[in-house]
Length: 190
Image (cartoon, rainbow, N blue to C red; front, side, top):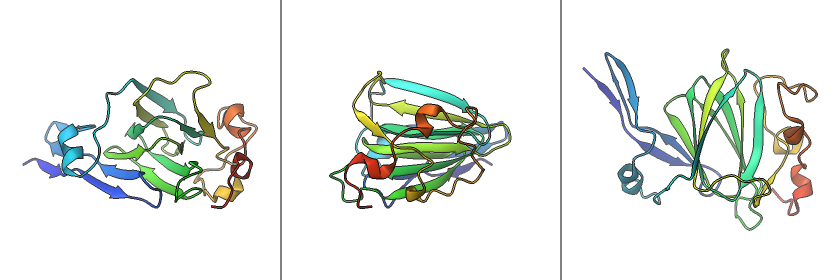
């Protein structure tokens, strides 16, 4: 007998950042997950998404960190294989939740809807790494509008589950490591 998990959307401490549970059906052959269904988002009172202009999948090794990037595009993100510790920080200067940080463990079946201007970062925690899927409502181009801060900033209070050697490029890129501190972005009253 198939087992069904229904779609669910939960707000977080960051305005517009939502933790989502995909509709999922488990049966004898395996699992089917609805990555995106417009009618389910509408029924949950969420705005329509898309059209998606770019979709990326990264494979990230265990312990490696990517982020904290906040481009001016909406992202729907999820882990499709493995596990990740995800972190988000509101980098929108005019937001009522500016500076708030939310963390979550992502496994297949969990998603995050990331609004424009909210920083997205993660660390792969599973032994074989993780496959992280990003859907963007705009195409990424070098120099596009947005902001970033280093995911290693102690002021963010992110307790990354695995140690990170900031000098090891297999754990963090120089670009992410050397991104500004949160306090260097302007408004700094988290």
